[in-house]
Length: 189
Image (cartoon, rainbow, N blue to C red; front, top):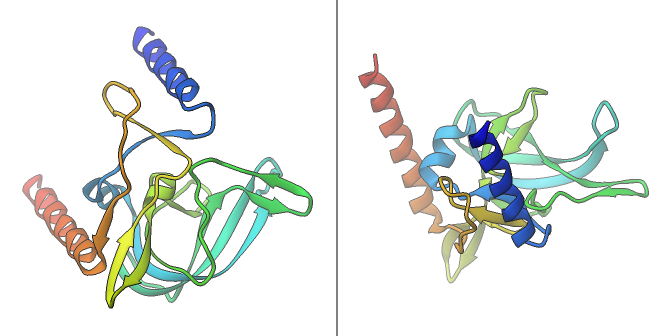
């Protein structure tokens, strides 16, 4: 019970330190994002629409994504990526750290499937790397907006920056991680 109490107090401290404006999260690197994701795709958000969940207790924004490339998992031409929050009618729900995926924008999505079969961002907004072009070179950068990042062991708040890669380098890193994970699972057999 002492460990649970310590964890609870640590999380409460982190929330208080952040002014209750952020969701507490552990920073995820590409290796962890790759390992924990069931599906990794490159795609563009074509449209989005907010809907109530079945119990009408939460709002989810559904993003229709045209998939141009699948880095992990089964390839399909389109995917429904959901994030917490949105506006339905006159009711809005904001979930810090859930992210705001923009229509017309290309991303690399690191996704997990929840118990209701919805694909969600791994690590909240950390699991979406926005793809941009700068002077003819494509880059991919994630965001930590709305997240208060804490150290995984101490639960103390950390100052940290978003991850940014040349787009090709991010894809190579994901491929390397997948190869390493496959080799590790073979070694375990």
